[in-house]
Image (cartoon, rainbow, N blue to C red; front, side, top):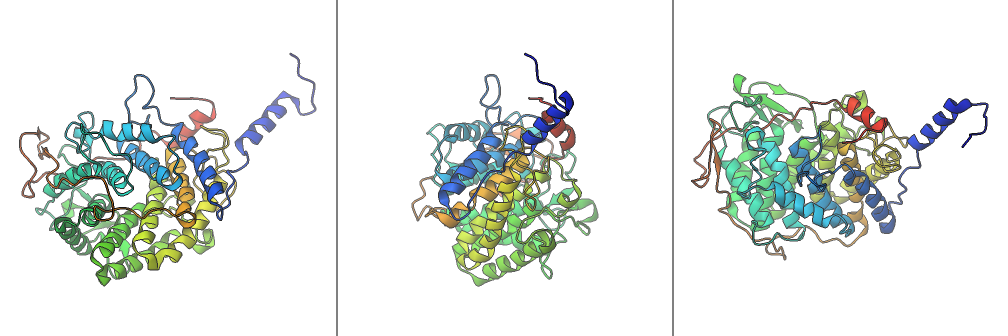
Length: 468
């Protein structure tokens, strides 16, 4: 077949075709219409699920392809449980359930054999959040060969409570579990804030005071360290045990704030103690001023430490997903903050949908990171897609009559098992499955979650048609 001659020449034609494909029409959304939001969320969810290869023959259910780490797979399927909740779409229900149950491991504690020695507290927590979310939303329960969703989360709690390290800095969780992993000397906010949040959610779901006591203990410890400035309500990223936690990494990340905001909201909902509501409000005020700068787009979330500079790594590109979801839960737990939160959820959802106009992994459904722009920024990946999915899907709570997260008292079907967790991790790297976890046991902390392959190279590879 011969192509007609054109004054543009063949390269000009190809350039036009490429640019038209690159900046396809954005995912359309009317944030006042439930049907429109469901359709937009479905498009973004499809654009995210095309990255998943764990359902392919010979691959491992629940795993994501390189360069994504195991913890982000937990966040991925947590988001798919939430997508089901927001929209009622059961398209990915079986894949999501299979993925979580495959990665829960033989001891139902999210320490599968292929991850254990490189796994950290924050990694384990993100999978526990997936299970806790499934329990709270009454996602399809596991069969009898697996622990219940809440039992899986309780197993993680029991193991992490046993790792509480009072030998340095007066307490807290280390980042790494094993001494031989880099980061063992770091006590980071996502591990400790995550443990606080998990404790608070378990307290609310089960009404077991032990979890509330641990949530209180963790808050008090964090508030007394350089991780947390209770005067400015600023949350830092982490601190080193080598300096006895006297110096902090002051980087500001959305998900660190989200862990404490939701944990405090859950504690208020459970205890009705006004101090927790005050804490939620103060943290929200700092969150608004830090991550929603008016000069960069009114009421639109920005990952302020890296997004304006184009320096977000593979992990950081996903952080907005978690703060978004945890703000939604906060609005449900503390209705007095609902409109304050949803003013920002609506704007971010609108902005995120407008950014989903790329033709990367999924033509027309590929989302970038800059929600304050309606032109695709050219970036793509699971983090961007997951963040956009959360921002768009979250609008459904504003439009549909969705049940608030359940508890055992309000109809939750996931059965509690306070003794869950049959294994303990020792600091020398051995893994003893013969004795139960007790709070007197000690271990260490978490996994390095730094990116090995740069986002730019990863994105460029797909741009030229590569696949994994």
